[in-house]
Image (cartoon, rainbow, N blue to C red; front, side, top):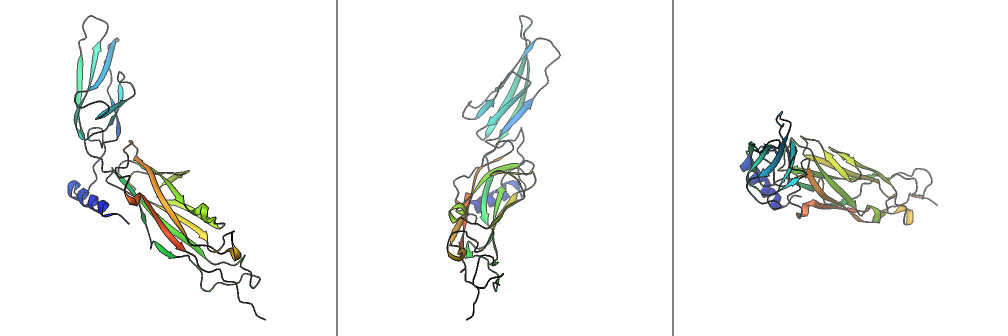
Amino acid sequence: MKSLFKVLMVIVGVLVFANTQAQNTGTTPFAGSTHTYTITKSSLANTSLAWTITSGTAGVDYNFVGPTDQESVQVEWLTANTYTLQVIESRTDIGMACPTTRQISVAVSANNFDVYAELVSTAEACATVVDPVVDADVLGDNTTDVFGTTTREFKVKMQGGDNTKSWSFDYALTDLSAFNLGGITAVNITGGTATGNNIVVAAGTSEVTISISYNTNKNTVGTNGQDSDFDIELAVTNAEDQLGTPDSVTTDASNKTKYTVRAVPATTGITTD
């Protein structure tokens, strides 16, 4: 479940933003985001452009991403503060520059964008088993019996970000391979689009569900397909929004959370003499 720190972050966010999330725009960017700024040059044939930031320190407070002499420039904002971004267009065909200067004020705010994982149900619980288990064919043979389908769900949530922007993260499920489940039926993602272990979440959506399902007691290792106890852990990494704003709280324990699944006995059907 969410840590006390994250709960406090939510309370602070409500007080500061009055139940609304700030928008990560070019004039009010989040620290860590990258924005594009564009002008249209004059109709004069021979001019040059020079983009600069008149306050702060390059590499500490901001970075230009790519060239600074084109009609568009990209800036990665690093530190919360107020800056002046300017572009100067100068003539190059005569002995005088005759410059035109344009400026824009940029107020960079602290990065509160946070992506974290939560359990949906009890952290430790038994695997799912039908009651009673019915012999499918041969009495005393478990191999075709249906014990049930065990499912566990995780939620991955975003808070403090800009709901008008998409966001993404990488995820990893561990201990599945160690358990060597022969009966995995699905790893389902709802609320986002998965490509490999990366999930992209559309603007306006603040949570994703990741569920794992497997056929109880269909383990290919062991007598009668007996499952063992195991942990299934979800880790969330590399979270960012579409402007490159990184997860602001990557060391919090809730970026990694797990279920403990306790095995049910793989009892055979009842035979008679």
